[in-house]
Each structure stands twice: as structure tokens, then as C-alpha cells.
Image (cartoon, rainbow, N blue to C red; front, side, top):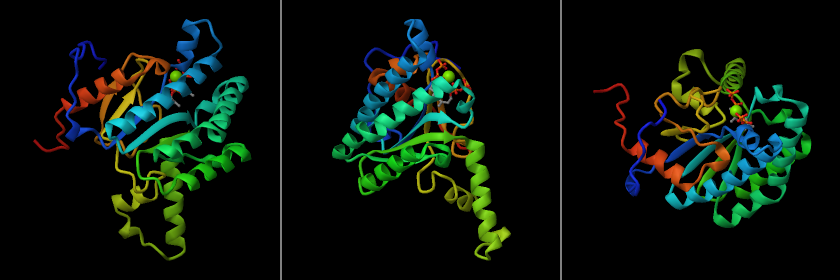
Length: 247
Ligand code: IPE
Ligand code: IPE
Ligand code: MG
């Protein structure tokens, strides 16, 4: 359900109940560009700038994990021109700008099947992950060539291999064992999932991890998403009753 009701003007967040993990489906870059008669590429650039701001806002609000959907396993279906533009932007960000976050104690890693990405991009990802692995501020997880079904498929392959090697038995596969074989092993499930641009679907994002997440679908196009939007989403989250199947 989209929010018909406006959040109160001066939102007061409960600092004790800021979600530990927020996941965002950053959607609407193309429509943002179209509204301005700009190429889609310009929308992706504006989207990357919005991400830079939101990372800082999450850090300031005390969020511990931020997972952002940057490129899905289905996004390869887009025109070669658009895929190239997104990859170039990514390349640029990985090489220059993400490193600036190291000074802010931010940790970065990538979830998804990165082997399909160009070698230089893979190298930059590994470098950033290595350089930031000791940081203990906000952890930013970037979903790249990520699909929830593909992640589960890869986890099943890893588990099958361990059984083949005699290191695991079928009856010892618990939910925790499955979680530990996902790309998000050791990351708590997101309490809050935000999707921008008015679409109300999951599009193959974190299928296993969102079992009990709260959802906030917002009309704002991703490049326009700002601190006020983030606080509004957290405000709605804080006003929900989470039951987990109990009463
Ligand atoms: C999200 O914006 C970014 C990616 C999927 C890479 P879109 O490019 O999907 O923007 P819309 O949905 O066309 O507006
Ligand atoms: C989801 O957005 C993927 C990302 C934001 C990276 P899409 O725009 O690709 O999703 P659909 O096609 O509208 O479901
Ligand atoms: Mg889209």
C-alpha cells in the first residue's frame, strides 16, 4: 500500500529503535531522467549521488547495515548502451569515490554473482572489500548482478558440495545453515525494506532474508530520495506492530 497519509511535519524518531538493517530497492532513475528529457544514464548518475547522501544519513542515524539493490540478474536484459553506462558509473565509483568512505569508518562489500562483471570491476570490488574489512561503522552491502533466486541456487550448490565432500549431512541442514551459505552470511535480516518510485514488488531482491521485514513503498523517484524520505520510512517502521506470527 502506498502511503496516502502524510507523515507528521516534524517527525521525531525513537533513537532506540532505529532499524539495524535497512535494505533499499533504488528504483526510478530512468523516470527521473525522462521527466527532465535527459538520457537514462543521467538518471543513474543522479541515483549514485543520492546513494552517496543516503549512506552518510544512515551512518548519522546509527543504522548498522545498509543493503542497496544496484543491478539485478535481470538488468542485463536492458540495452547494451544502458548496461555499459551503468558499468562505467560503477567503475568510476569503485575506483575513486567509494574509497573516500574509508575515512568515515564505513565498510563496503558486494553481494551477488560478481564473476559476470568485467575483470577490472571485480578487482576493484575485492580491493574495496579488503581495505574496508576492519571498519566497524556502517556496513554497506551493494547488490550487483544480484538475484535472490540465484543467491539461493548458489547456496544450495555450496551445501551440496559440502555433502559430497562428507563435511555435512542432509539432516543437519537447518535454516541457520542455509542463511550461512547466502551472500549475506553474518548479516542480520533487514527489519525495513524500502522501494522507491511507486512500484510495489520485490523484483528478486533478498527473497530469503525478507521473511519478516516491514515494507515501505514510496512514490519518490530514487534520485530525489533524501534524508526526509529516509526518516519518513523509519517513522512508519517505528509505528508498525511486528508480530512474527505471535499475537
Ligand atoms: C533503477 O532505476 C536502477 C536500476 C535498475 C539499475 P531504473 O533504471 O529501473 O528506473 P526506471 O524504473 O526505469 O524509472
Ligand atoms: C529492481 O528494479 C532492480 C534494481 C533497482 C537494481 P527494476 O527496475 O529492474 O525492476 P522491475 O523490472 O521494475 O521489476
Ligand atoms: Mg526500474
